[in-house]
Image (cartoon, rainbow, N blue to C red; front, side, top):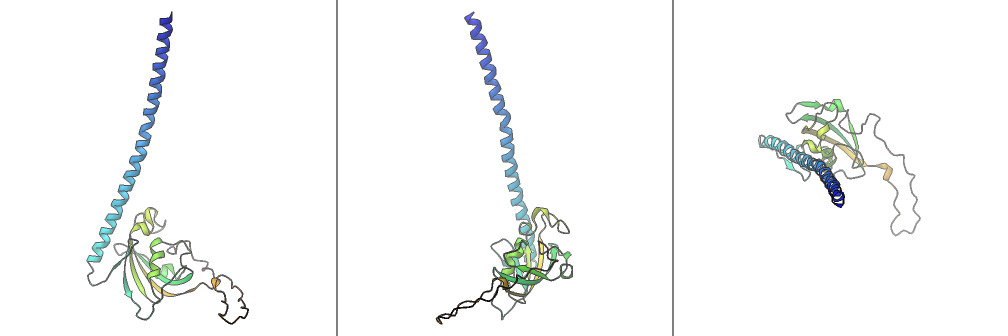
Length: 220
């Protein structure tokens, strides 16, 4: 009788052990699949960036008379019109007024200046294309600059949901017409050493972008 009970307990223990082991093994492929997917995704992105940069470098090499400047953000630019008199560049808190033309990396026109109209950008305070957000701060008033943007600092894998497709490198030509401090931030400073009580000027109403301005400066 004791032998029978021992056999039954041994059998139940073996079934329970096999069941637990099977459950653990069944979950492992999910973890491995997730890790494999992330690795493949990272590898794919690296290859995409490398291939886009290779295309841009070929464009630069094919135009030896044009001086291109590489940036830390991973894009390039050249001057179509360079100012020899201006020294200031836009900074956070300024309002920049510019014109913009957008082509694909083959040079096919996507958006003309007339398509987009005059652009107004509150520097570092509006959500625009990453490349333009950085690139405008290199420019001086009345300069025209052509930027070569890989897709990861343009519109990435989703495009602009209009004319710009997924993973599309862009050629953007920008003319910075002017930039001024945001008047909403202007206040009168006390006169140094006079001992007089300073009078603050009334805070002017914030100048808002025109009603046609979109979340993204490229969208007409």
